[in-house]
Length: 318
Image (cartoon, rainbow, N blue to C red; front, top):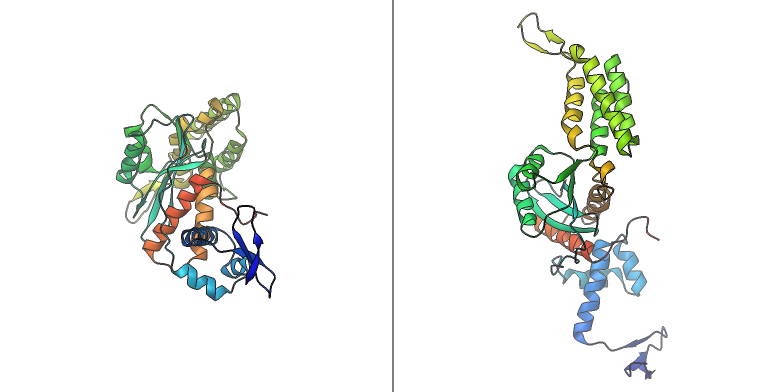
């Protein structure tokens, strides 16, 4: 390296006589900061270590050795200032065999509000998380897939707040239980209704759909009561159990199925979390497979804190 003039900031510039690249001598704290920034870009990004090393002009082994000295743990990032009461999407996703992440995500400010690592979803888990949120602010509305313990916790902590059920979950489960080729007229008619649910966008259309479902329920009421019997044991069961399950699924969700048609700030699905958080998080954990469970937790925290600062790159980013 030889001296090669002065930068605009008045710092001494040096030049490599072999590759002709120029650089300045950085302070030790700046070196650490730059290394941390590069580490996070690789850790949370989509580029493999080889590509990152090639981009900065170093060997993969050198970069790997440098990164091994750094920690998955990051400093907590505070939430961005909320301009209005949040609309929270609540959802859980599996991190490992023994760890599950339960998350509250604000779709208005596009940032995670609160989260917790648990072993499984239940009322106590969601009650604790929602109680923590309640101490800080009152959400404008909630959106979820309708997990039983979650519904109970919402009624306990936020009884007067609109709780939109995820329409995509209702459609997906209904079509899965009804199969592609229902064998009864009731199943065929209900499958048509389930598919038409995706087309509901306005309040008048929602009313028409609700009336159609109620009419279907009344028309096939006696049919759904049919029972089968085992002649040897005398045990009885409902003949059309899958149909009854779909009817119960829709009937239980119906009071909270169309809040989005009344208030445009409320999304009708949990896709903001499932597609925007859970999917890239699953890819991230897959890329760093082999790390310990504590490192997985630290990686997830780092990912969520980064989401509070900016939107991370995706696989389709250019």
